[in-house]
Length: 184
Image 1 (cartoon, rainbow, N blue to C red):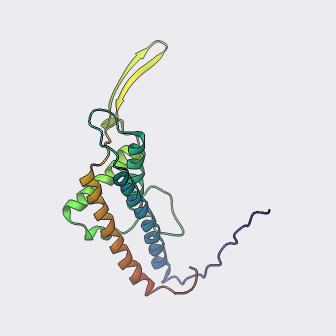
Image 2: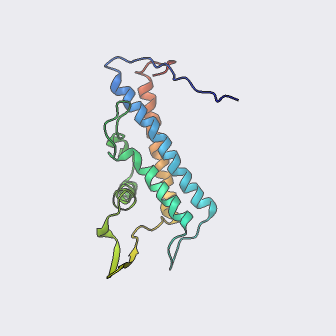
Image 3: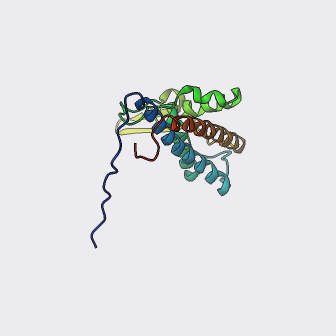
């Protein structure tokens, strides 16, 4: 049986005045997906009741879900890619005004974890000891990143819900200035 191929959707161009609104709308739309993914990771950690490690390293599933959570949450807020012709690279910083100072600190911490520990291996924050031998080496490396505790996960879930609400308010305002009922 031949595989079906999807034909591209014919998009209607927008005028120069609407282009910035469309680029922002696309970024907000993509950010909703990222935040949903982060929330799903939180829900999975909590539903599975994965134990927080006390003396040994976190389980691989907890480490993987924590990494997925940090990456998905931070994605809308970091400038990590080249120029995009379709969407703004990040959400506006003003989106974060809906957060309390404590929530903003949690947000900043997650973006910092993404930048220092998840997206990059920052040797300055790792406890690393290397022993060299004539035929190779040996080493011990303690990763600084720990999984979030349940109260932090619940607080981040609330942060995401606030951001989702603000994103929806902004999308509603943008829909008022963009053309409706056509593919953009």
